[in-house]
Structures are given as C-alpha cells and as structure tokens.
Image (cartoon, rainbow, N blue to C red; front, side):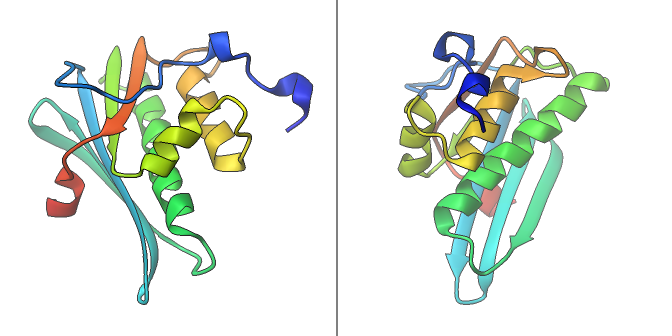
Length: 147
C-alpha cells in the first residue's frame, strides 16, 4: 500500500487489549493454527449467548500460525460488515484472540503487514461509513475451540 493511503492513527477504530468484562452487542472468538495436518482459521460469532455464525478456512501450508490468527480476525470483520447490512446491526463488537503477536501488531501503527493493514482498514471503515462504534480485540476464553 502506498504511504499516502495509510490510514491515519486517529482515524483507526478502537483496537486495544480488553481488560475485564466489557459489554458489547457481538462477541467473536477467533483462532488460527498450524499443525502437521495443515493450517486453518476459525471464527465463531455470538450475539449474547446465541451463536449466529461460524467461519472456518483451510489455508495453504506455507502460511504461518500468525497469518492464520490474523486471517480469522479479518474474516470475522468481513462477516460483521455483512451482518451490519442485514438485520443485525452491531454498535459494538469484541473479537477475542489468543495471539499476543497479533494484538501487538494491531496496536503498532508502524506495522504495515498486509493482514494487519486489512484488519485496520476493515475496523475503521466499511462501505464509506464507520462499521461499529467500537471493535475491541483482546485475549479471551476460546469458545471457538469448543464449538
């Protein structure tokens, strides 16, 4: 991405480590993994206690665990964009990940890796308007592993 197209940090959506139990209308649990069997990403989306969607992707074996973790978040944001155009219109969402590297990358405005930039763009704007009042990304329990 050209430097003039980088989003200004002030225009970014709220991305920070969740401390405690912050109430949001949507909760997303993401995970990515790389094992001998392959590389994959998964996201499970809840509105309250109701699971409203489950996303699962098999990736090329050359992908890293970090790429799988970041892709899970990106795909979850894309799905939230679709949901916001349908009947569910979340005004806030929390995306949980167990990847500290991804959290640190998202908070580092100097990191311009492709997936990090795509997550930042999706978190900021969707179709010319802000997608949600806030999208929080933080470490949390892994409901996705149990679903």
